[in-house]
View 1: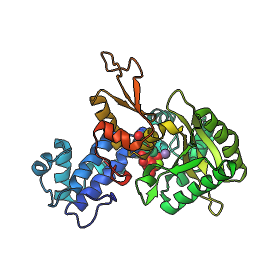
View 2 (view 1 turned 135 degrees about the vertical axis):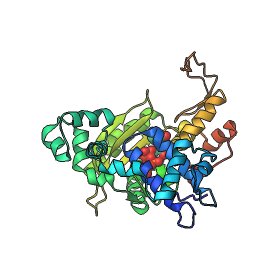
View 3 (view 1 turned 180 degrees about the horizontal axis):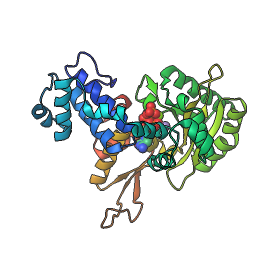
View 4 (view 1 turned 90 degrees about the vertical axis):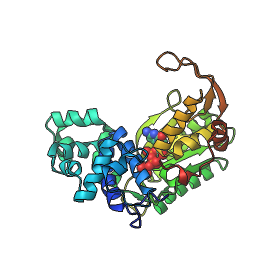
Length: 339
Ligand code: DCP
Ligand code: MG
Ligand code: MN
């Protein structure tokens, strides 16, 4: 196991891993979740091998490596490259698509529409396309948002929020989540859970939206809001942008407001990674339960197409460890939740 996730040069398959990793990043940029997952799983299998996998036949018997991936592994070993990867670099439409998909909030549908309208550059979008205010920010700060955030800087953003909260109400707490909690040396954004013992979601909402955010905005730390959502769907969240006083690089910041009784489920959800979340949710559903970011539920009645007919009964929401226990999954430290 290589918990840092980096392809160690000591690994006999490091060159294969390096190229598969580039292919995986490509699919990630294309927002092709299935291929991204398939590649990540195959890479994690390869990392665990002590010998060099040189043929498709050897590769195909390994877990999570199907025939097509096995053929690619053989191609890499034989030619030291992957034609599929090279072709992505030569295709101009493909490059524009990836460029547009990098705009905050832009999905495949939006990016394709821009391409169909004849736009090819970010400048085209700025001057010709009709953009939402979030998309405008996504374009203006395109290169900021594309940069990884060093761990110490993630911490500094967390500290700013924590100290602001402390002056407003010392019983509030903020916890840095996401890749940071998994121990990553750098992160794509800053994810923070805000909670307070025995506070309702309405009280949390009021303090954060009416006091914390306005105050951090006037101090210059928060730059803008990109998206918000409240209860009913998937919890209360705030997506926006922050920037340290000694920096000019704008960073993506995600806040999640969580009542105490849901903290365990929220910690589990917001720690990820996304593949780990998928697999643990699948496991819950195999056991007749349902796991989401608010809790673990049982007696969920499902219809013919496995659609939910009721919400079920809450089994556990408060404790992350108990959710693992009830599901019969041995505890995994955040750093080990990398699939
Ligand atoms: N999450 C999820 N499914 C998604 C998006 C997010 O389960 N589609 C959960 C797991 C993630 C966490 O939320 O770990 C935070 O989401 P991020 O997109 O911020 O991802 P990470 O923090 O894991 O990585 P990064 O460093 O790229 O931000
Ligand atoms: Mg994150
Ligand atoms: Mn995030």
